[in-house]
Length: 360
Ligand code: IPM
Ligand code: MG
Image 1 (cartoon, protein in one colour):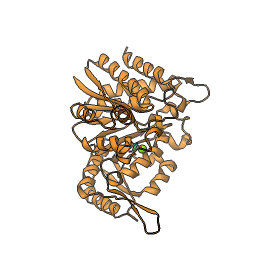
Image 2: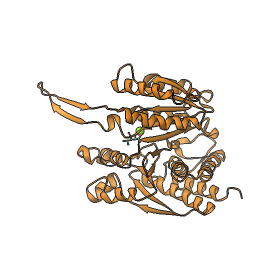
Image 3: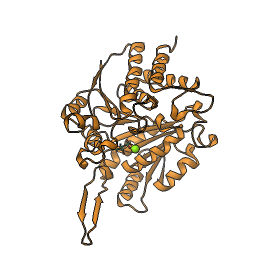
Image 4: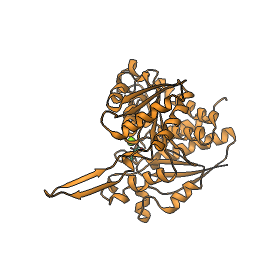
């Protein structure tokens, strides 16, 4: 029996997470796995309920579970709270830190049926299969932040960017292991021409490269990488990078898959993995049955793969998603003329149905 903490969060989080749960339930039925789902509040919803975006009970639930399924958190309603109560800083970052989720995996894979859905040209994106591995518990996100008054009556703001050899080695080794299971190419992304932390990053990668002679190691500056990702994305296999660069590059890379609504993620490293779509809470479309639940559903597949070592079951979810797209069903973010429009709930229902009918 697998214990799963379910944290829908805010905005479209509360719409997409139930669809991912449906997919897991269908997998459970089909393959004889038992899941116990326990729901808890996080983010703005938790703040509204009890005054803090990460209640102790929610953190304890996560720590006592086998995996966490998270929707999305934050929204304009909570943007002006004191910084430590903002959903992102008060809940998401501490959750990542407390659970030691230092490795964030974001697979940018293009489902063939979505070749035309992207804003990018087909010949550029066809065959794209990139795994971005983002360091998730260090760097600017977790460095000291402060504001001071300046003598001219203005203010000065500081965010400190720190990385240690230990933190870099840990994520880079993780990335080498992942590259070994794929096409054996690792591109490390930094800004070593400007940043000291990036120079340490690059030196550390260069040293480790000798231990993985079977993997081809390259280095790329982050500005160049952002350009290369849309110029020639097929050159990449595994990309490893620090927290902030990974945040920015994965939003960009999501367009290689057609929509950010397709980008799943796994945050792992500690005892309990956390699975969440890479997109945000999308308050503009929340509550309208318009959100694409596929990133959340594909994140559930990653849970099966990385937390439970259930490859066959993970593939079953991915195949069901592939079938839905092949049969021309689309949520609004992926809609094109001639396709069939589906809402959030109907998409989740179909995926669950296709999972149940696999092999039959
Ligand atoms: C992501 C998100 C978060 C991040 C936000 C919500 C704090 O953009 O998971 O990529 O920046 O890490
Ligand atoms: Mg982001």
